[in-house]
Length: 249
Image 1 (cartoon, rainbow, N blue to C red):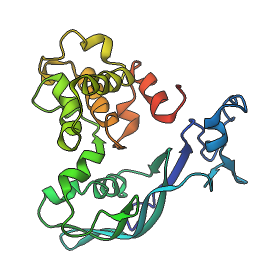
Image 2 (cartoon, rainbow, N blue to C red):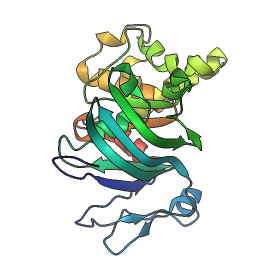
Image 3 (spheres, helix red, strand yellow):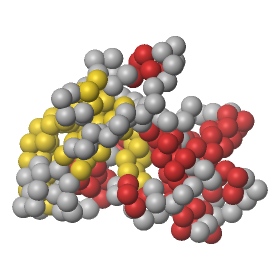
């Protein structure tokens, strides 16, 4: 990325939760060899302890030569990076280097604001999501974004989760109920709201609203987190973080 401040680092971890930085922390306890998730997702370490791309994992998102402009100012220049299926990827760098800008390209949320433009290609399962004529509602129903400040919809707790599912999936009510409950459980919120699902999501506390937003994103296909160190500070979100990184079964 071109930035007056710094170049961010691209950091990927396996879906089982293995991660690394320059200090090369100790690897997590191995799962039994018979676990099929280990066979499919076993990470490969390079000389620095970073997780090398695994040939067993297909590319979910392929960012190709992407640049971004705020009016005449070019914030990103010729970014290319693969994001692998069933891996957690982190963009690491100081404030202002373009991390959030790159995230906003992935569901084209920047198009809500005039004067902003992205060039290049971003392939999601082989489809260029920057192509003209793309159904943006369908795209955003597949790629959820969780901001550092909670942004629940002004509707019931239940409908906050079900809204994106209903847009493009016709499910029996019983199956929709199961999807909503599953998302809320994985965000460690179900036990607190199961008896008030018809109440407004705006009636929840700040921490609960953030977990509601995480549950809303979990219910769909691809999740983007902006400022994760602020999102996952609540103790009850440790379980959600474990779910995202695959450390829970």
